[in-house]
Image 1 (cartoon, rainbow over the protein chains, first blue to last red):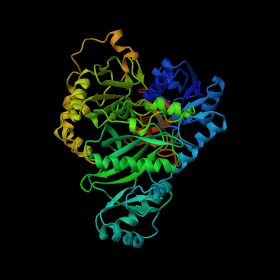
Image 2 (spheres, each protein chain N blue to C red):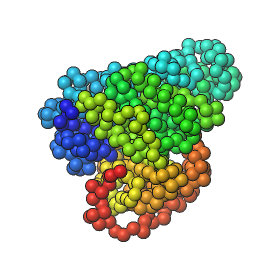
Image 3 (cartoon, chains in turn yellow, brown):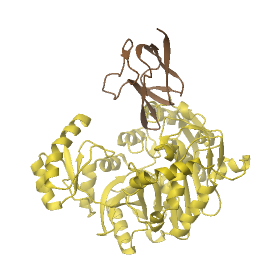
Image 4 (cartoon, one colour):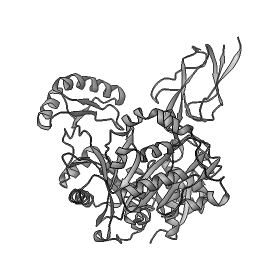
Length: 480
Length: 80
């Protein structure tokens, strides 16, 4: 291991997660923080910490020069970017390497390639990985779109080439609709992005979101099977599990092999995720994109395979080869993660920053809570609403859901609203229990369950005894 | 005529413009209606409009564009 001191260029629960992995590897840790995160758990846990500026992320966690200066001042030899912020910024990865430091992640070149939608799609096609039928690049006229749809069929999505995050997407189900929507979409894209370019893609209705975890060392690549993350609200995942309840062994093998083919083709280094849409009626899967970072939902893979992904990615960054062979990776039982966000499901998921006045963390066999919370902590309003992740593991899916419901019952965060009531309702829902869902399932479900979610929030949170110092100690929140 | 303050309803980042490349919602000296938007507060990546809440004239802004604000912090002075 060439790394001795690791700087964590992130915050929140993932910073805590990385510090834990680094410590297990015997590395010293440096936590950078904005002034809003001075009292964060990561700052408390790290060996050293460095103030990198005001609360606004653009002036702190996204400020590359200040982060590189912090690494130099503290003598850190590697930087872990976590997820979000600078994790998929190719220029930052290049700047880290130019400063003779190690970037814990892929090469700047891989990040750049996979960050370009068209290039990533071409790389996938070249590796024999199916992509969603569509125009591939931008279309210049409604006639070109119509000609394309003759070969791929309706319904199709019209997307702004310069868009992202679901903005500017329209669905056409007939030639008439297509003719009507294209000029509208062009005008909107021009107004929103200054670029009227469009592309057209087949809409896979009722598709599931399935993603394959890979680990590479720049030469060899293994997969750690898949996660299913179909339960989403506004394209944000809320519940993730491994393995997917919807794949047959034969399709799982095909899917994971395709991920390996693409990751090998780009000489992938570190932890990465290939996202797919899966149509469980036709059994077809389509590559969407590759995320060149550790993901929020990585713990379900860790629990189901027993592999510590964060620790492995640090080892690889430190120059080690992959220590695990593909035939040593197995799925054991079933794991589910739910995101505990500071949002009020009874009030349209309104953000709920505030102070944690009391905290009880669930425990027991097969329960893990990756979080940044401690009693008395004030959740700042400046960043995303993720407070932590409750992860359970059990022998099969039905047992894991019962365990999740049990653990949610023990979780008590007082002082601010959280998404716990949502997850309790989902864990008790017949469709969720049967694995009958897709990426467009949750939003209508939320609309039809608004009243019961509001009522659930009104019930006193818990019957657990008042928090004691022992129960609430941050050190009791981890473990696998 | 009396001087009143408009308070931030939420903690977060205060923006005086609807988008970085757009003009400010309101400037010092502008007249305002009760339902006029005077800025945005970004809380956990969601954007919330701040309404004037009274009819009158803006004397001055107390918070600048992209300032971090607390809930209840005065962000503008108005003459009603």
